[in-house]
Image (cartoon, rainbow, N blue to C red; front, side, top):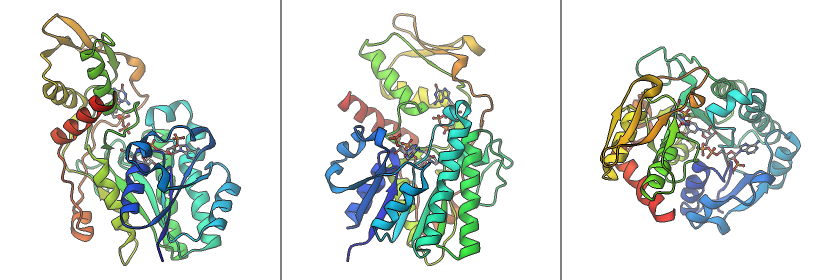
Length: 337
Ligand code: NDP
Ligand code: GDP
């Protein structure tokens, strides 16, 4: 009998890569999306798996929709990836973010507890929970200090997952994943935004684009590898939480410097503060400007993860460094743009 897995948020970056991985492992995959998202399965199409997934509509704000899906199928594993996942947007819609990203997780946990507590559950926790970091390098024991409605909602979901594990003996785990990127990353996230912007400049489709804080640092890994860790967490004997990260951190500016180098662009940084800009040395034209509208009311300045536990217990380790990740993202963006 094939194992049956549910992936919430199958239309997102991680949902698509995870669906591909589980199908390769001979799982049957049910994936949920929202009615409004039905037409945008571009990631699943790109991976060539759109017709291999059983789609169900499931809006996370509606417990009846969640229960309907759990009544229809006998899942052995649930990967809960759906969320309002964009930090910046969470400042504009804090109530919706907590309802979807926070309470949405609790609705699923409660459904599993009441209908079949043997189902294994994966929660997509985030390094954003560390926020204004209380330790220079962050691991599973680092105190959480969230700085956005998104991160606060993830903390609620994270503790709810731990609470259902300890209270009801459920196999419920949280993967605390640091930022992970890929050609399938949403266009609003900074890495893909930069790559799309630079390619449009080279094609002369735009003259410049705008960014916010260039000095925040992130521990960026490759999404395709990170979903393997999710699967491994659910194959362990005991449920536990794991940090998944590369252990290296780079600023947004570092990322731009590496991307422009790979694209062979002759550029230099000029000016300071709000006037800081990236200039094309060949024609002296500005191609990246700062716009304060991209600043966040509270920023997470530095994230570096320590994934020793996952490396030891899950036998997982990152294989793709930032240079290679940028190459993968740029090559695929050029191919499909
Ligand atoms: P995406 O934003 O690419 O995907 C999120 C998914 O959630 C989409 O399928 C989206 O559907 C769905 N969704 C959003 N709102 C709702 C809703 N109200 N009801 C049902 N579904 C909804 O995120 P990623 O794939 O990058 O991330 C996966 C998970 O991991 C998220 O929970 C994210 O917060 C978390 N995470 C991600 C990190 C990263 O670096 N990528 C780091 C740490 C954690 P639609 O297509 O309609 O938008
Ligand atoms: P996050 O870590 O989940 O918030 O991922 P993002 O890719 O959205 O942002 C990473 C960092 O890039 C944050 O510190 C942002 O403040 C910074 N950043 C700077 N300019 C931009 C921008 O134009 N868009 C986004 N999304 N982030 C930006």
